[in-house]
Image 1 (tube, helix red, strand yellow):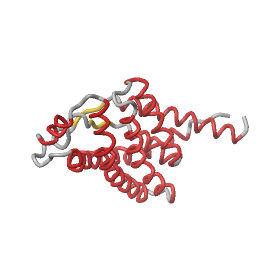
Image 2: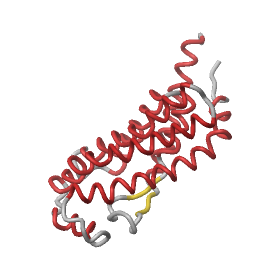
Image 3: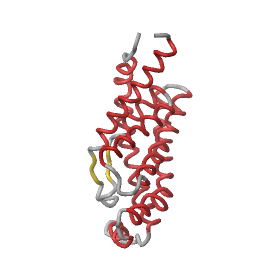
Image 4: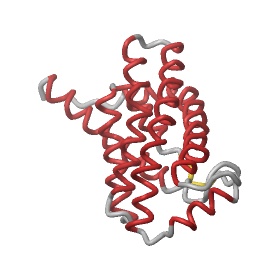
Length: 204
């Protein structure tokens, strides 16, 4: 196997492996009832995606994210005709792409930290329009939820929530900030010991 073919095979194997691990972690999720309605659930599936992004670059991260979403769609199906899954992909990419580009520029702990901060903030900002105008409306239109019921879930946490945009601003944005911080801390701790194991995956 020549060098170019070997590197391509190694890349594909690592992306597929991290995508599979990410899919498994996506199945383990729990709500944060103090900040958001129960249909917002925290999982740790972005950890393998970020590790792959740091190890192999932003393109690898996007592919791992895509595999995760597609596998989860195949396993769990969809109640939003794929709209929710597409929104999940976009929000995930908003997290990993800034982190990946900043870390790729210079691979230091400081840049990893700056990348994770930038990714967290970008994800939180992107989650606002995605939730207000795509994800939540898709649940209302395609999954049979009533708008009043969803607003009521937000209103039970923050009494001033009386619309979907306010729900997105007051629940989705802080939820994603918390998610970004948790995922960033775990990734920051795990990347250094896991990266050498990824490098050991090679084909001759």
